[in-house]
Image 1 (tube, one colour):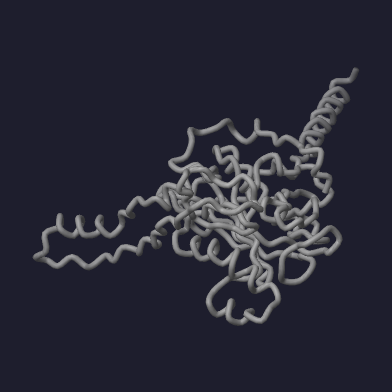
Image 2 (tube, one colour):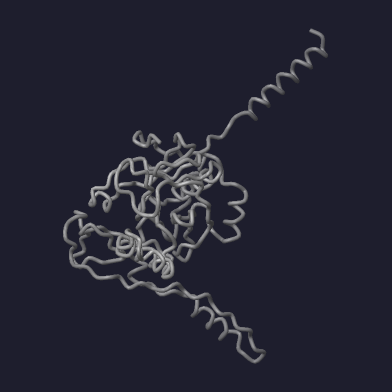
Length: 327
């Protein structure tokens, strides 16, 4: 064979192999975090594999991701616009009402669906114990992509990829399940007053408000139990046993002391005659949060504080596809 022809064939073959390699597509559930998200994590001094918590607000059409830092508290990472949700303000009652759920949910890796018909999704776990106690029905209540909703919270495909990746990294880091607060609106005093005539107001005030407020005050995911068909937030049962039947009478309990958010330290300018050591001591005393029963109660409640040893890289991480998560 002529040397020039042989050389041309080798170049063509090498080019074909290169193009074939470039055409390999990373599946959506394994895509790395976008560069912008990584930069924001670095800017906020957050670890990629640190635990997360989500808050969903219907009226504002927003989904927030909060991330734990080394102080054991959760700090705001990013707010994402919700592309679409169905129904109105208020909880979901039954299959077919096309309402998006409201309540406190926990999402484990088993509820992550990389093979969703809506690009990517994770199941909220509806109905939870509270929903079942009220005989509420429904299934496949998800946060997913594709911007279409029939009882779910729908994001754009690009945003669900980032949110999914944030959850994946948290699971890889050792978090067993992350908390999701699905709320009708930001439950400020003003908003609660504005919605006081709504038919769902009693449900919001008696069941959801305390969980919203405690997180606002502590930046700690609240400990949530269900008994007497209602949510109990941040309580300690006197006999040490949490209720097993969400419809039965509540065992005797007491509210856990809730610590306030630590104030940002006030760094005063050092006077020329002020001893440097006294300034350092004063600053340190303003930044050390006290450990209370409330903070201790949240340890192990869907979060790994202090962070687990580094787990295998995400390249070797695979979710177990749950056959029931058909959406």
